[in-house]
Length: 70
Image (tube, rainbow, N blue to C red; front, side, top):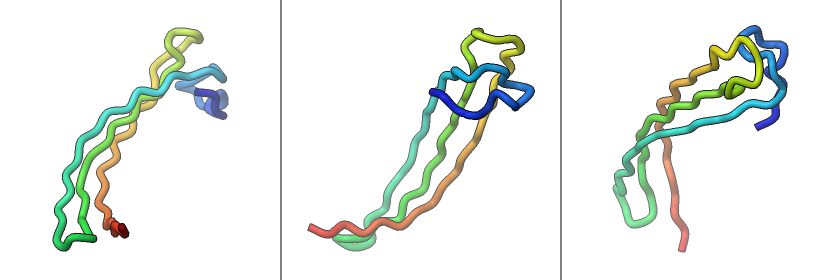
């Protein structure tokens, strides 16, 4: 991943790595519509290419509404 985190004290490098993980559930309340609920975790770090390498962590809970047309 390349980004503009170089100005961030935790990430002094222009080259970074992104790790993502998550889980979620969808409840179909009709044949074409669903409510989704879940959680995602993001970790951005330079993989030891620069110093310091403390990384940035994001916790991202979400809820959404989906409509399926087929």
